[in-house]
Length: 290
Image 1: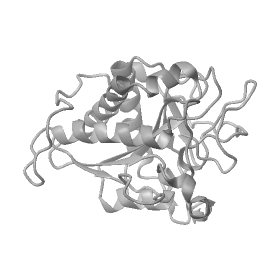
Image 2: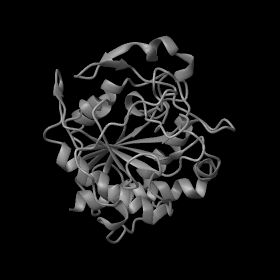
Image 3: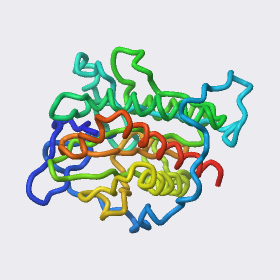
Image 4: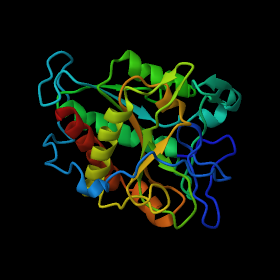
């Protein structure tokens, strides 16, 4: 996901390309933000049986859903908006993320052939919605290509909070340098300042993110990132408003690097996107079922 004010694209040399505010990758890589502790490798954690609900099953009518996630609310946050590039002034305005101010949103990245991250995130989010509804969950999207831009990162957090979500996942894809491959899940750091206080969600979010990482490996066959997270598939950050302002368990997932040809071939494949959606949905289901 490419969100930085400095634009999209990967770094050079050995520097790590880091996502910018709430998901994007800055052209000038930032110094790595150290995680407070090294998490267990995701492939070895919480890789229990996957939920059985088929992606093609139609959702039950509201109020009549049944299944293992009945009574649970999941918020899916498709990163960026396909029309953000038409509203640069609006998405460039600063919003308060508690500890500082950041851009409302950014355009996101794309593959070299022009497949936009915002299109990818909506596609995977729709597939996740179908899978989770089939399990009985109430699913809310922060947007569904139904607004001219955004929502801003602070509003994305408020949507999850207002819904009283049991879990929130923000879906992205990275825009790093070619050769940088794999996925990583971004976890909230312990942050307190202004309206930001993640003290109650750090632990549950790590559990959610670790389960998603392990089951994403199993569903997709993709390896954890070889450039962020020390091959754990997990990264902890304190500069993302969507995490800082959340009062409910929330993580981001960078499903792969759109600027690497091998990862791009996966991200542009409908069958792989279905696997990605399955892996994320499986992780959410595992977390919600305890």
